[in-house]
Image (cartoon, rainbow, N blue to C red; front, top):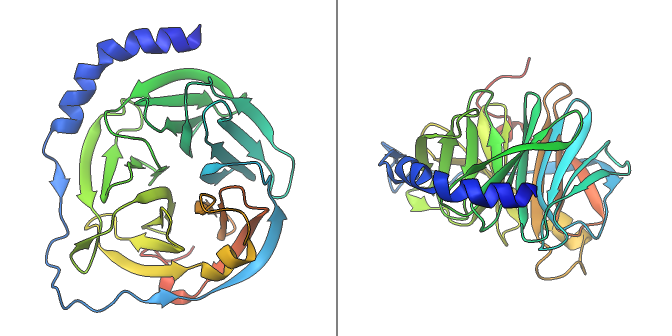
Length: 275
């Protein structure tokens, strides 16, 4: 019944969403030269390994209030999950015709994207109850927030900044590495003033300046991908979560057996200083 109401309202909101996403608000990286220095590739250390459901086709990961929130994909299997690191998840299934994607916690809500349906889901954070939906015209891949705006990816080199209440488009940026667009932006996390982005089928995480779209550094997690060897071609690195209170970074992948807590070197410390 809820899905039926969503589809009825979707047609009415389609034109409104078109006006928002068609508006020319692109912000390109300004003042960047082709001879800009290469962004550093930052080293990391694995601090902890936590068990992770190897059946979980991870599309999004975030951390809030001591808990990890995970969005999983695949038609008929998509879910929203909540668990302590290494704990057993509390789970809500999506309607079978929706392919779940990225998730973020914004205040008392969990916001979850879907892939090709153009429908975003808004859950009550405490009860994990579906409350409402919103629409968008692009594909839905990753989502995070900076405390005042939602930040969304669609698999291109573009990041969209949305009002967290109306979901209207405020601006967008093109992500570049020395003027070359960085395509296939996937799962996102906002960490100390920068956007951290998985790149689909790439073993690296890009660190992005949210004002210019410039890649400031890379974190190469190839060794973790090898540690999860045998997971399968589609089961790529995907999932970044940040515990701001304790300055902890978690990463995982699709159908991986572990969630890893990592510490990245100082060159990837972010634009904002630690408290």
